[in-house]
Length: 376
Ligand SMILES: *Cc1c(COP(=O)(O)O)cnc(C)c1O
Image (cartoon, rainbow, N blue to C red; front, side, top):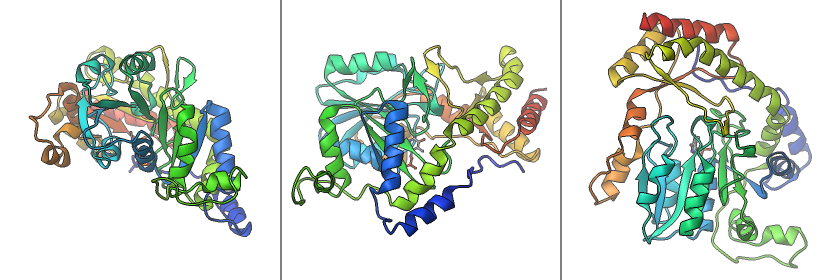
């Protein structure tokens, strides 16, 4: 059976963890944390990068930084992972869901404005499959209405919009290093801060509401409780693991993109015969090979194709269940359910194929042939 995902280890993870242990400093914000953060800032042009224990935590920090409170509204795509919405409901916000684009599961940028009210505080965009949303359109809307933009770039490390790294464009950005992502540390995440106004406070929220970071930099002569916050910073063991991965980022990305291109070339004829749909990569987006998906005509066909692949030794999976229909949202929202037909279509029809570093090009071709057999 070809698995859907297999975490890739570069080999140096345990060596760096051992170095961290022997250094005697294994709590957060040590050498490896600083090395990772510098790498992210220098490579991708984030104003400030802070490692977190997950992307979910980074999103929670974003909600705290914006002082989201009951009565505020946040616009979030419905077709996304729970955390893109959860982090804001925890602060008491009302989530207003937006639909996906017809040609991409990401937020329909043109639909955002109709959801804006006097209570709207922020727009969350999700760069689904590492493919950029149209950020010029999103930032223009945000600037016009004085809103914050958070890029949920969990899947989008080393992806670009018009040459700019994703996560460097919105006021805040969040990444995940969960073992299913391109670059991993088991669990792990990153908050990127591109708006100068948030930098100092982000370090305080990160360090349990204390000005400990400023103390270590010699900016204050004692530290204490100055704000809200939590324990968002990961231990050095996580950062050591992550740094080993970052050293091999280029190679990891190159291999993933090669698998992606192999699938795309092999399945393109089926798309041209209108038997299925493949990802649309707009001219402004550079893809990072995070995910390869295809879209079937209806849910019965999707289930039949997943079953056919399974019978032939391939583990393929569907993805998100739109959040506007989730039990939690419907139980906590009195208004009548939103109609988001594109989000529903991706919920019903999208299939993700195996894509990981150790998947061979031969295996990718074999999987594509199995799909062709299904349509024949
Ligand atoms: C993976 C993912 C998350 C959650 O990441 P964690 O690090 O597991 O918290 C959030 N949003 C999106 C879009 C994701 O793909």
